[in-house]
Image 1 (tube, rainbow, N blue to C red):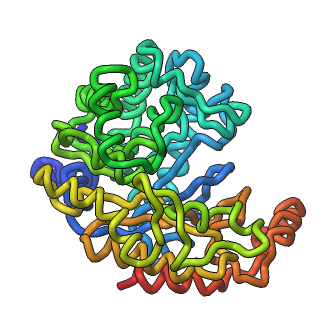
Image 2: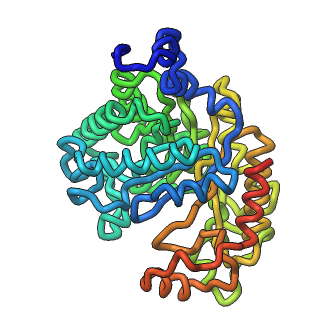
Amino acid sequence: MFKKLRPALFFLALAGTLPHAASAADLMTFWDTPQKGGNSFNAAEPDKAYFEALAATGATWVRLTFSKWKGEGRDFLIGDADAYKGLQAKDLEKLRKALDAAHAAGLKVAVTPLSLPGARWKQQNDGAFDDRLWSDPAFADQAVAFWRDLAGALKDHPAIAAYNLLNEPAPEKTTGLAENGTMEDIIAWQAKHADSPRDLPKLYARIIEAIRAVDPVTPVMVDGGYYANPRSLAAWPRRLADDKVLYAFHMYEPYDATSAPNMKRDKPHRYPGVETAYAGGRMAWDRKAVADHIGAAFDWAKTQGLPPTRVVAAEFGCMRLWADCGTYLTDVMDAVEEKGGHWAFYSFREDVWEGMDYELPAKVKPGQFYWMSEQGKAGTLPRDGELMDLLKARMRK
């Protein structure tokens, strides 16, 4: 192989300092400093211009999902979440092309499936929650095989900074556990389901073992249970054994206020002040409540001997037309940054939904976005929204 290298590169290779070799060695080092980025959840593969625009905001990384892209089979890259039999070659080529574009723009990537075998994303499963991965051990075997294959295929790509094993797993969903119940109930649930198909840390450990058989260096990012709730993560009895793991949570609480249904109310809930059911009682949400909810993940990490840079707020956001979105985003970013973790806002230029596209100014209404998108004119929409200015200021600090 060295015969094909130019003389200068020959000596770099002997010293182990080729750019590619260095990127592999430094993958975990990237995460030793708090990183700020965005989520890419587009229906079409993002191109170089897209990633360059994201990099121009000051983002250093992107959490990239491929599951919405049109593939060879029903489920992109997996082929069929009902029966995984191997990676789809043409889909893998599309993913590599997107990774190439991200790398050219200077972005690191956490590649993130929305589906795994036996856990098809609800929006691609006729609106039904797919519980098979959490109830049938055969699908855990298939999920392990999928990630072994994907890590083997991507391990040498210079854009990859993490494998995010599954977006928002929810093994608790069908069991009757309240999503934001008491910590006692959440911990008891975790203990009850230990060593069962619903044991999320056990599944992660199996997948990581398979990944390490083909890729010993790339960091792995794991979402906590119940849709990446930080309190579900905090119920885990211990950290995972692998020392290259990032622990992720998502932040949309209070969901009753940050989400699309709130915008349909005659009088939308306001922040701070909105009250929701929480931990067996009622929570009045304000800056401190946001920090306390987020803090559950960081407090757990500290008890496990992990630095705060092993914790990631992998998604957070609110409806861009909500009057209090800027205040909420600020409080979330403050809470994560004061703890010393990483974050990625949701989302950047999503092509089929405008609800959390912070580049769009308030004057751009949803109907205008969808009409212009249908006409192929989405690229002419104004992108001078104040909320993105807020995010840019934080990413460029």
